[in-house]
Length: 165
Image 1 (spheres, helix red, strand yellow):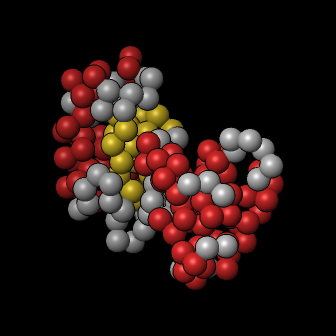
Image 2 (image 1 turned 90 degrees about the horizontal axis):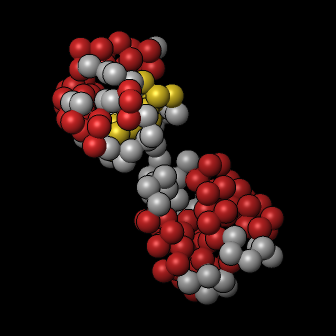
Image 3 (image 1 turned 135 degrees about the horizontal axis):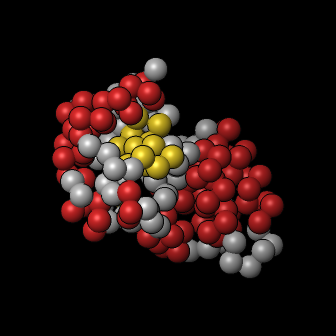
């Protein structure tokens, strides 16, 4: 274990390390399993911090640049904890043309956070995403994996109320 790995390890909680160790151990002997490990960590812990990236790289004997490249390339990875609920705004062409900018503005107004941020109470994270494949229902918002289509700004508060209760 390198000095940097020891320093990084000190920044992680015992629970985080235990979960990551379990995932890494299960996949360590599988060639090319870095993506699987990172995906499992994201699923279990909710995010992958820089310290987690360094820990995975050290434990799997994979260059940190490879681990970081994976985490930053794929949009489903995040480097900070998300809120209990995630609201994704589709910015595909049909949704954009269908009025997505107005929906985003309404969300920002109601929640007082920008896309990429989480409300101070940790309840809602706003995210921008690319096409979700529901173009016929544009504009589309995805709330916790549930698609809401043909959405108008005046209907957004109702959706929001449903997750805030």
